[in-house]
Structure formats: C-alpha cells, structure tokens
Amino acid sequence: MKPLPTTPYEYALWKRARVGVDYHIEVDRHYYSVPHHLVGHEVEARFSAATVECFFNARRVAVHARSYQVGKHTTIAEHMPKAHQKHAEWSPNRLIHWAGTIGPSTQAVVTYQLTHKPHPEQGYRACLGLLALARQYGPERLEAAATRAVAIGSPTRHSVKSILERGLDRRSATAPDELALPAHSNVRGPGYYH
Image (cartoon, rainbow, N blue to C red):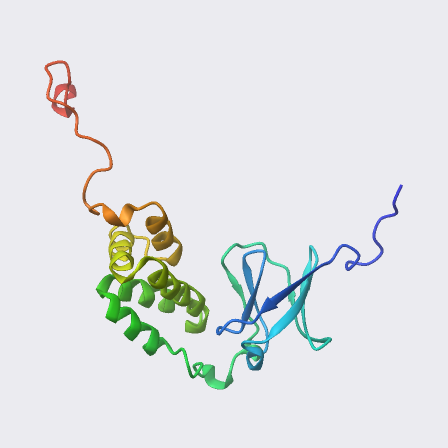
C-alpha cells in the first residue's frame, strides 16, 4: 500500500503555457495572471488540487489558489501594468475598431467582451478568438453569427463559435427551427383549450 502524500506537491502536474496579451495563462480552462512583462513568453505551470505556481527561467513568478471555475480569471493586481496601461498592440479601441470593420453585431460582441470583465484586458483573449474565427469562416459568416448571438441574448465568443460550427449563421435569426404544423381538422390550436 502506497503511503499518503506528505506534501501538497507530490501529486502536482506540470504544463508549459504561453502568456497571452492579457498576461494570463490557461490551466484547465481557468486563467491565471503572471507579471505583465512576460507577455509572449513561455512559462511552466505546476498545479495541484490546491495551488497553481508559475515559473519563468526556473524562478517562481506567480502563485495562485487553484480555481475550478471554467472560463474565469484569477488576477493579482501587481501583475497588471501600471495604471492599467493598455498593451500597445491590442487596445480596446483597436479591437472595437476592427470589429466595426466586420459589422455592427461583431462590434457589439467585442464591446460586450471588453465591458463585462473586471478589467478590459481579460476580454482580449475572447476578442482575439473572434479574430481567428473571422480568418477561419470569413467576415460575412462571422457577422451573421454575431447577429444571431446578439438576437438570442448571448453575445459571447463561445456562442458565436457554436453558431458557426453548427451552421446556424446561414439561417435567419427569426426563422423557426421547426416546421409549422400542417392545417388539418384534427390539429387543435391554443384557442381550443380556452
């Protein structure tokens, strides 16, 4: 029989991750911050059931309590640029302007991503994901999918991607997904029951 672990690191796993423009890395679909000067660099993450540690050049640069909330961010204020400076290449205005060149619905989805996070930088990853969808599916399909996502009240990258993957962008957002009932004397409408 194997003895119980004596340290919390005995069952730790390791993962290499590239730091995104929002200065976060992804571990099991949750995002953890690292110092902003590491944007674009590769770090090693050691994670256990209780903690996530990030190492750069064999030096620990961040430690977080482990979170299991999918798609959420854990951010340490000291990791942010001074006065929440925008990353020079990807600012909220640039992302909103880019989305506007696709169409008003894409712009609405991008604006939603940037305004419904504690810090706009946390929405960058979703916005860059939309940019990748424009390259993959084309701007017309992206705008159609964004229009449908806004119409159903779910202006997120995940919804837009799902709409594109299922081809729902090619259907009218107001068209019913089911066929209308045929006219027949045995088919009773809602008025029959009142």
